[in-house]
Amino acid sequence: MDLALTSERTLWIPSVADYPDVSRQFRQWGQKVKCGKKDRVYLLRDTQQLLAAARVLEPAEGQFLLRSLTVAPELRRQGLARELMQHILHEPRQWREPALYCYALGYLREFYLGLNFCEYRTEQVPMAIAEPYRRYRERGKTFVLMGYVQNDLR
Image (cartoon, rainbow, N blue to C red; front, side, top):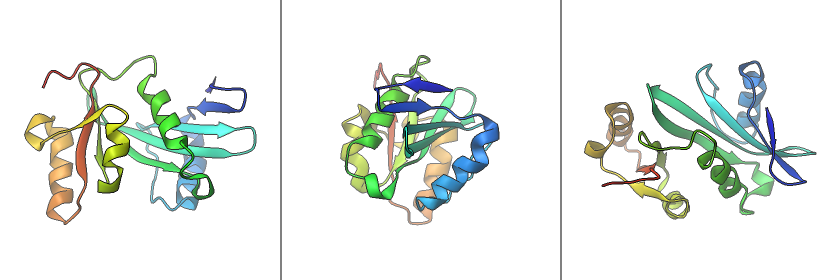
């Protein structure tokens, strides 16, 4: 499904049948990703090429985890990841409680804060989000646990 964003760019939400091609594109951009049947994939493209991609998982009913946000290497630092995320966050179903969470790399903390994500502690998030995060931390990963909640009542 294509959604026109500008005369130049569209948001493409591919069907599951397109996921093998999307997974190959992620790998070409240096991401080890295999899109699963239950994933929600978002692609920003223009008439010439794919520009950026993101994958949202639903590890438990109604709980969403942003994974694998990336931009074509030659197009990075042009605001395409922000543009894609703004469209994802303002998708018609909106991200209310439950929130959209992510395990952000430390250097991307400010990027996500600029999109109205907040930092969370594991005891503040659902178990399906907290447990994988704890396992990553135990293996030495230094992700920042963040979440986007429109009506954050913390």
